[in-house]
Image (cartoon, rainbow, N blue to C red; front, side, top):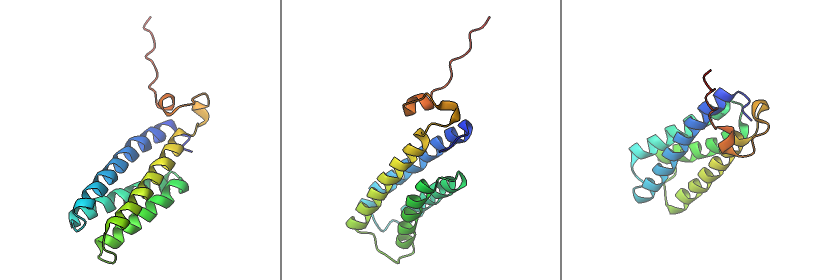
Length: 131
């Protein structure tokens, strides 16, 4: 759980970007698994996601991000070739990472105890009426 509202919002924005980039990269790698630039990009996204989770103490998010990073690292270093089953496994890992990230963001912190949906957690406060 991220208790600081500003850190939670920052992690929300950054993790959405990393997860989308990873999703896009895996889709493209299905068509061209030997694309080294794409592998590097996907690896960096997984690495950044892992680092952000670690910095915030989100071990449940860090662990699957690390596994995904390891898979991509093995592929980019030529240790394990990418094939359809490996990409499918990474897609499943990415789905799990997305779910755990959502849970970490949705967990109510002390400021948002009444919030029951992620939309309410991240809703911007209404502007105060001018008097």
